[in-house]
Length: 436
RNA sequence: GGAGGGGUUCCCGAGUGGCCAAAGGGAUCAGACUGUAAAUCUGACGCGCAAGCUUCGGUGGUUCGAAUCCACCCCCCUCCA
Image 1 (cartoon, rainbow, N blue to C red):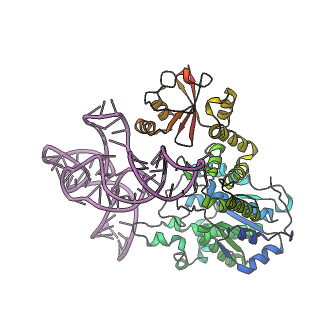
Image 2: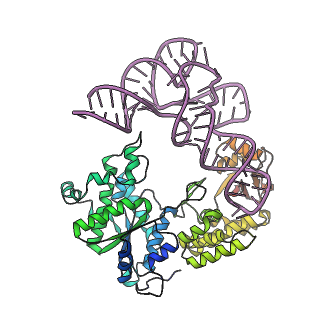
Image 3: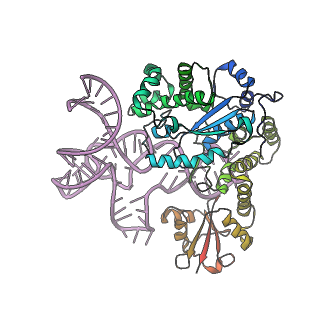
């Protein structure tokens, strides 16, 4: 969908750092003026790490991941590192409490699940700047402790480590502490950078702004171990204008894995972006140029209508993550549920909606009371809540408001003798099929 | 190992024998208003239609009655060794 494999000397374009800056995507740069020259000079190798903290990446990881892609598009060679080793330790950066360790089995399983997700945005077959996927477990698991402490640990001053902003609150906050395990995380990540520098001549690391301490640690270590000057940049952690946490909804985190967050739910998430955030998110999460985005914003400002930006954002990002198919499925469901008259949907429409990934359950004619069905479909988490929703006029079936708590989903009321489209609140839908 | 401080409902955090299903804030959900925004207002926020039932790290105990008192245990933090 996007061109790639350009040579690094396509000097007519903006350099990658200026491009990122125009998107407000640079928080800190290590290396300053030298960095721009370094990147302009030749094809460079750029890395970013992703730890397996779940079985899927979530949308928060997209900013650095897409940034790697942006580097590749600018002609550089990206390395996506999956943290099979660092994931076993747990990054304490800006975390307010110690985390419990996951079992090694789970972590290696997660590593495998993350690999295809990390790969999907990058081009692994475009010649000189083909992407690389590596696992830091490869160079740490057989490193013996004594050698590690002598060769690597010796380069770190604890005095400096405890000064890092990223662990300060853990050291100072009353009621919290930090284990040596987590405290050592920085050393491991620093070593990754040094190792990638040695193996692949990697000279640049990017990461979220919480990674600044770990990145600068790696820069120092690489200089000490290999006498090489390397560089770093941090990207913004995505925040929302209203202060609430980005990437979460009622039903939880927005994952990249379509089995965990359906393309429809994913699309709806982006569609719900606040006006105050949407232009910023377009810059972070899409490959539209800054100029195009500014133009969209100007048009929205000039118009009295509802802004077009959310729709553009939702389409761009859904297509990027779930492909054309995923996007069209998401759009089909959305149109069926939000713009049409639900009762007039054909049986084929409803089947399509089910296939497209709208949550769907079956019920039998013995257990078709509305309260029961709301709980069974998890539209309400208890009978009590279900009754409250009905009392608040928050529930509708096939487009008809349900006011009666004893309402039953009988065949006579079904669409095409078996379908019910349940709606709770303004945007939560569930398809129910009646089976005899 | 020693001394001290803690573990309360999703989170923070009050509560030190009955007035406690447990203050307050946050988050979340619903409704009104809207643009499937934001802000604002209203309501809900352990389970149960209800009577009532189950909760305050765990287990036992004291008591008519315990989140609150006692014993033991588990976990966390700080300082000292």
